[in-house]
Length: 224
Picture 1 (cartoon, rainbow, N blue to C red):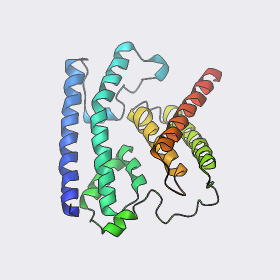
Picture 2: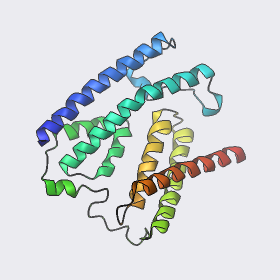
Picture 3: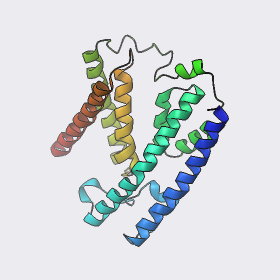
Picture 4: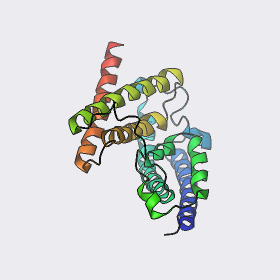
């Protein structure tokens, strides 16, 4: 498929999905939960005063409903973004920008106008193209790479969780949806830095990283 066709598909599907999701969320928020919903509500869907340890049952049901409604759109957005990055010959790890507020809009516009590249360039669109600065820090063995990936993921996840909850005091989609996805992706990128790994081992590393991070946060919450 030509690059222009892919960029047009991304533009059409992206804009249509955004409009559909906004009005779907707005209808559900008002008709089912009696809540107002605006474009800026995506930044703090649970309200500015929401706290994880003090969420009412109706607010929890509202959040779960929005998350379920968002899953097909997240799948569609990530799939189209990865396909467009491959077509443009760009690093696949850039898909994490799909979850960054404001930047994801600029990223979407850039993907819509970005030119396609040859098949050779597409094959070079690997997670770490021509990046060898981390050779000495990431072990080549599968076990060593997995341990490094999990350790780094826990450190980065803890830092971003503290920034989101204590500094920004935001309990939006960035904390509950984007962060787990990006951390799972990052752990696999580190794990497969030197060579391709099997799907099963990549899933194991990603799940272990998220599970251990959750355990660390629970212990920190109990102690603190």
